[in-house]
Image 1 (cartoon, rainbow, N blue to C red):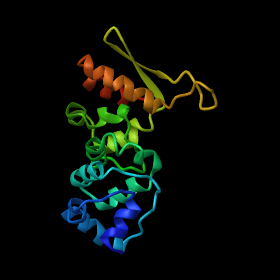
Image 2 (cartoon, rainbow, N blue to C red; image 1 turned 90 degrees about the horizontal axis):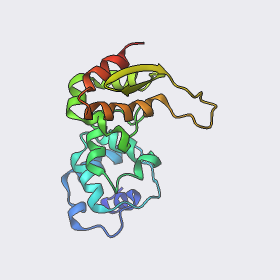
Image 3 (cartoon, helix red, strand yellow; image 1 turned 30 degrees about the vertical axis):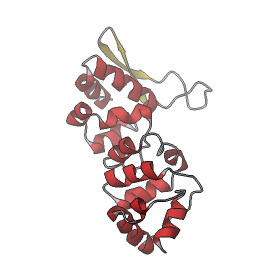
Length: 179
């Protein structure tokens, strides 16, 4: 495959020499020539793709990102944040979203490991609530079959963000570790 073909597969319209000669782009080309690349059919702005490319640490993870349509939709909005997120977390386990930004917060990462986040927080069935600076871990009021159901993980992300604002992040992570 050539650099021009790769750029077309990536969905970058009107590419400039900047992307064609970018060192990491050439590395991506070499990587793609020895691995399968998924043609996704989305258009990506060159500037945003380059931001993602320059900030991502693994070409293998980049290819995983390019396989996921839900993730691809965010590249043109928050490429640097996505790169930071996926430099830590496995895209097959966790997906970047505005709510998930707490997971790349410096204070959060001081108290929680990648493994704890992917194995404990992601699979926590209970939800954390904060009221009057008191943390309560309780059952999710809705079951998976209920129309109002939201995954406990997503609800806990929102609560973690609120706990950070209230200077209760460490306590919240400790509480979510209990079960």
